[in-house]
Image 1 (spheres, one colour):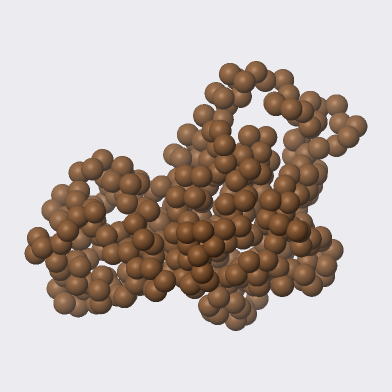
Image 2: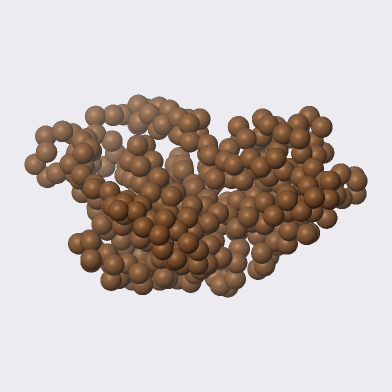
Length: 355
């Protein structure tokens, strides 16, 4: 049954995956997500699953292909440098329509970077995904509880669309400890889907071929195009906080969005009409959330822990370049709510510089 606990974000994520029915993990340790492997190294066997520490991230990701095709709910986790090695396997997962849940606990980059906090993997995760035409739903939790909730949902979405789903979090949420409500264990029936591989199965969609059984490339391209369009239309998720009358609207996700929520409270006390659009999905980007913005709005303030503000292009597309966009980009440090308020005041005064 559901239970309350105080858990570190990475460990809560791992436990949530097990309770969602995950019984196969393969991956490689890298800060700041190593606690996932440490936790699953003993906990996975208590639920009669399999946890394999591989020689590298590339191997860990490719092991998911066979495990998922066998009908298992599967998981692999990494951070920015390791996630870059996922991309070849992600292309196979998308192209062959194999469901999986992947997690990126972001850290400072580029290159090997450091173990400091960052949200610099947005472009890699949201607009990456390997060669060819592929696309993954990307969920962005802002708390340990939301990590638990979204990991559960990620498995349902992965199987609904036969597509990998990514949970993109960051070093702060992965390492912080909060109270969580852990859900009940789900029973996962590996015989539920007709695409599950069985060596003696007569259904062509249950066999492994190079390409797509029974479909031409043109037919498969049309199928994938329609699937991605359905995902984009139906799976947008967001939270709007006092947006309808705001003179300035923050856009943020993850730990930065929690700072912005505090900034909204402080700004409103001072009489500054500040709002927030919190991204719960980075893809599909929640463009529908922007419909609530008032015509009197002076601009959008993107708050992100990165060098260049990687969500800015998607924000400009969502607003059809109809609003001025400004940025507060912190590197290796969590944004400051007071600075968010100060920048909002500068935007209203007309003294802030656009990005």
